[in-house]
Image (spheres, rainbow, N blue to C red):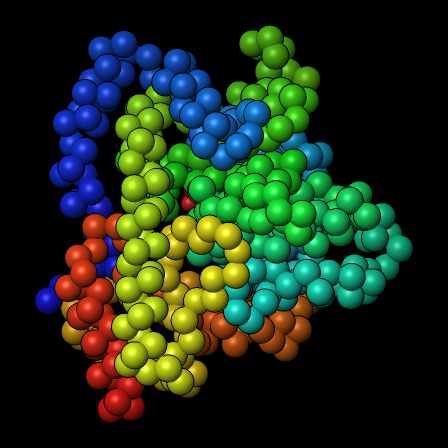
Length: 383
Ligand SMILES: *Cc1c(COP(=O)(O)O)cnc(C)c1O
């Protein structure tokens, strides 16, 4: 049996006619850049995320970059994030000449560990402390970071909160007072990616920034088109961060199915939990479902010492799996100038050597989930 890590062809088969119709409308209109389709998608994503506004952009990476630009982050400013995320989070900070201040993650959720924030900023000298501007928590794998303490810390230290919600569209977080909010609606900025492998994927690159602040919304729209308002009059230096009308038309169709797809991911996750617990309750750690709604962009298991052997074994059995992420960002060549030591972030380093993402996409058959679980079991009984 073959079980790819992700199979988008099955999904496409089911919605092909609707996609064709929606894209044909764009071809007929010959209106390709921004326009009514992008505006329609922005309204729908804002609603879906429980936000006032949304601004379509060219990718999740650009969502992060334009948010940092709109927040006024620049040369030598300091932005808190974690070393255990996709490169774009810290990459966007560094591209603006700002300094990523790494804070290690929680061992079980892989999200920023709020108990380490105070210590991280107490190590800053006075100059850097004064340039501490923002924090980017990541909702990794589809589960919200612990936003209550993060928002409190941000308020106390006057920081802008930019949520990296690239993997978490529709994920929910419950505050201690019982209030439930969606990813991207808690900070001043919510950054989403429509990269094809995300839960809501375009047919190419795309992204979105959500916000509840009308001034932020204005700034984002201006920065998206080279900082011009009105056209050809530039108060700010922006860029080309626009979303294509074609991608918007496709995403409007796919958004109608997002909740159904997410429920299927959750169903697959529950089945894995049941099967893997029966097979081996000791050697594998299953993802901790700590927050209200985990949307399972990835289902990441953890095995001590034999992760690479397990990956190889599963690959030989036709099962796609991947390591997110094999090298924590503080150990990347391009960040050596930050002078960070491997042991500075031990939880991230350990996670990078033990985690493995297994197939979780919505169209996975029950028999495929069983096949994956069985093979994990077989590997562990031999290992
Ligand atoms: C995918 C992703 C991004 C970047 O999104 P792109 O659309 O690929 O540019 C940023 N952060 C995280 C956590 C991601 O998973």
